Length: 73
Length: 213
Image 1 (tube, one colour):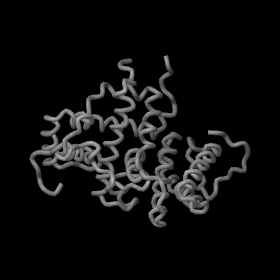
Image 2 (cartoon, helix red, strand yellow):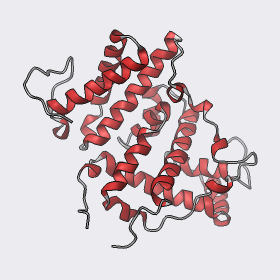
Image 3 (cartoon, helix red, strand yellow):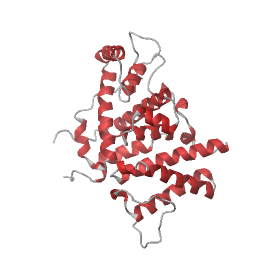
Image 4 (cartoon, chains in turn purple, cyan):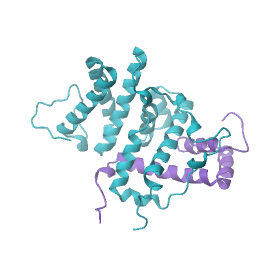
């Protein structure tokens, strides 16, 4: 981000949350992001769900999806 | 996938030493067949199609040791193939009715998700998912995930899978694919927005997951 902003909108916040998965966010960005997600449940949920997306896709790549872990009741 | 009936299915020009989980001539032959069909459909040229399939398979092999699952490998191979086909089409300047195939990241605006002030659109605001990890033990979930991954546009899919399936670092991906880090971040942002939305629509908000043990 070119200029430091105090207030992020959700498009910007989700963009930062996504970038946080691929690069280290410096403190300034982490702070504005924390302020936003503290106030915005949508982006807070998005951030949490990003973690799950990563977990699921990596498991999928490892072939866990091919094994049909749980038998149907 | 049908299994090979005899040994005459030697893949053309493929490297030796297939990773264990993919070491099956029938699987590869079946996959290749699907790829050729796809490439021919879009390129309308048997030679171009063969070339694209070969390049995609060789390209996919370079990362194949990181896969133990066939579904994931297939998804990955097709992502590369789609991207290659799109490249060929752009160079030949042929107009083919494969709209999503030709769209670049720039064409996919964030209007699907946010309003003009950058706030979530009413229906799109993420709600919490309760204990999503429990879904990882449900076979249907993986089928849904595969559908969502298959639906990812080619440019997004290529970098997303390099990052999330194969664990490449950001700058490795940028160098390999020839994309700027700015564009990389844009592609990943869009990919994650769409993927999350797809899973939400088809699984978490659809009441599919069984809650609790």
